Structures are given as C-alpha cells and as structure tokens.
Length: 140
Image (cartoon, rainbow, N blue to C red; front, side, top):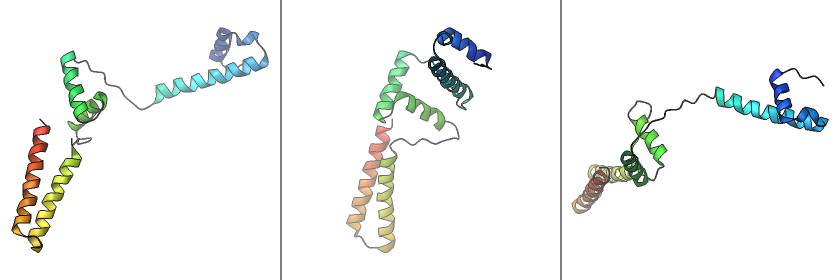
C-alpha cells in the first residue's frame, strides 16, 4: 500500500488502522479525508467573528429587548450593530409601521378622490395617530 501524505500516514498510525485489515485502512482513510475537508472548510470560510463582553445587567437588558422583538439575543445584537453601519437599516416592529402607512395612504386617497366623508377620514386619521403613538411608546 502506497501512502503519499505524511499527515495521512501519521493519522493511520495514531488510529491503529495500519495494524488492521484493508477495510480498516480504507475506512480510516475516508475518515481522515472527511476530517481534513471539515478542517479546510473551517479555515477557509469567509466569515469573521466578533466577540464582545457585557456585564450581567447589560446582558439582561439586551435579552429583554430581544424578547420584546421576538429575536434571539445574538440576532438582536447583530441587527443593532449592523443598523449603526450603512450595511443594513434595522426597523423594529416594521409590520406596525406598514399598517400605519396604510391608514395614511387611505386618508390621502380618500381626500384626493373625496370618496369618504369627513367623519370617516377623521376616524382613519385618529386610528393612524393612535397606532403611531403606541408604536413610539413601545419602542422606548
């Protein structure tokens, strides 16, 4: 049997496969190749890692805010960091803002077409205002 790689030969010696049958050696070679590929992927992947340290009080505050947004603390932290850069702008409670925008759009369309009565327009404006106030209070 010819082994071209010094690292493979050392792996086969350490695993004891050289003292086994041909099937044992073939299996050990496959295992070595699998581990080698995993290690290569780990080294050459384009991800970079940032580790930060926070106090217990700071972590609790992050955890509470993340739970309010229904996110994991790490996801929330990543989003907060990226929001402060130009990469991505994070908007919490985006669905609520879209609902408010729909109310305002309906008001604008209704006033331009004069399709709704003044009372209905006032009702829509009041709903949009209340939703916006709730949004701003929940974001604090």
